[in-house]
Image (cartoon, rainbow, N blue to C red; front, side):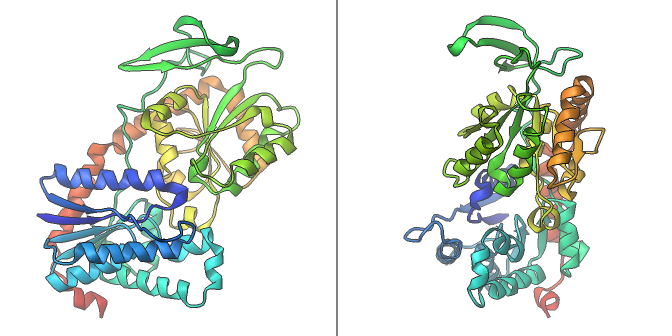
Length: 419
């Protein structure tokens, strides 16, 4: 089968997650024996900070790319290129699949509220989104939460396939943990590193883990925390920093926040940490490749995902990629209790969940993690097993194959659905 795949303009808050999903879809289609041509938007001559200008430029590029091409199926990831793909498919009798990575009617007003001041723009987007919902042959929902939103929008269940994200469970593997501690185990001391720190190297299968030092002293062991800040709104970090500053807990935690390279809130994060008196315990960094992410994950004791209970996350949410990556790496997870997260983990079984938006709840969760090393190690082990069982590239490919088969087998005329 000849398939045309059109990538979406990656949102600034999750460019890496969008690119990973796109790569998985294309690789799965090709591994199933299909001929796949790919379109990746590279809008030029527009202001990157104007999301609508970027999106409209991407649509024009998609229309130009589709002109004169032949194929049996168009797969697209967003409204912008989806409108162009739908027109192309209608003209040549091809079928369409919308891999629903986001809903512009929800995401754009939430992340770019200034768009609400542009009369007619959001309304036009909602109409285009509605057209795609009604006329696409199949819709791929990244979570059951997103599938429920599609059902509420009037899409029939027969046209929806739930295809969650996947992670590389060979690349992301657990570090060796000393029994009864929940901390990475000292395996071999290779010497002293800079600033008097000692470097420990552990081995897990084929993965070599450099864990760094476990800080000890008069304040006891320090729990090293990681928050993937490039994938959550900056406001979600506020309760986490307040939780770290809770009386009696200062200095007990060491937080690394991963930020996008050009994130505007890096300075705001540092300023808030300074005001709360935890600036020495908060570090902002950037991971530039999978190897640096692996090294970072394998030096961490707990991953924290303080995802907000807002419309983009709780109504139209994707599988949080950082949650899946933490689970695969065998890192204990402290997350907020929102619908997409609860699809992946169970409180007290594979993660520790707390109420969203509450500094007090996060502080209690951090204290529980620090005080229960054996239990948190058990949570991480069960989370890793869940990922290996259901969220690998193999399972992703199987779900794509099933969705493709159902798309091809449907005989319902497009005109009948859109009438």
